[in-house]
Image 1 (spheres, rainbow, N blue to C red):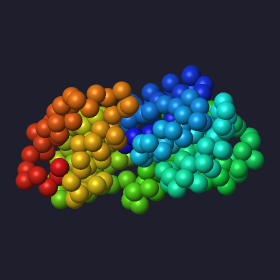
Image 2 (tube, rainbow, N blue to C red):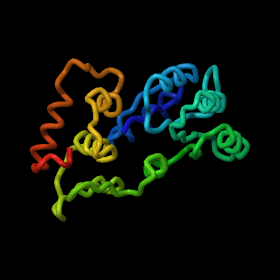
Image 3 (cartoon, helix red, strand yellow):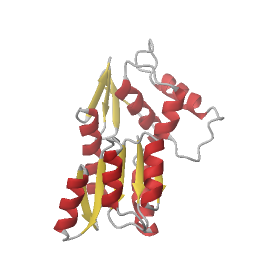
Image 4 (cartoon, rainbow, N blue to C red):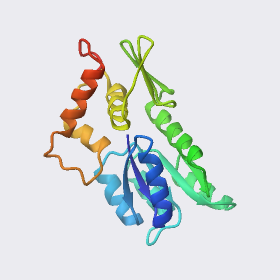
Length: 207
């Protein structure tokens, strides 16, 4: 799943991006409101983490412009502690949830998972044929047997199962699982798909 982090403080941006990447999410970073709007209108993100205080356009303005542009990507607003009016203004502008700074990694991840579930209209489990993928515990089982996956393998399978039984194009996989520096000319997508096929052999229903 691909997330846009909009944060101008490098320390916070690094902390948030690292936490998300360590939990299988693909992360793009925008350091200004203008850049965030440009990226969000060009790329289909699964979620946006948006700081309220930004240089140029504020997070509130960014949120309002994205909603006016009919972009319904779930938005988690990052706000300063104790500023209730900020949280209310953010929610009124179209944000789906808010998180006050400073926050723990566990709470950040829980809020992101909740946004993902809301967008997908489903709970923590993805099921297809005899596969069960637990989004919360980051675990895959097949007929009750646990199958070990790397972080990127898990992210790829989660995306594919969320779209099953549709056929997903290679370009869509790249957009959702790799950042903007990914070289589309490589065969990395094929490599990861083949890894999943090796770990989950069968008649192909799970791809």
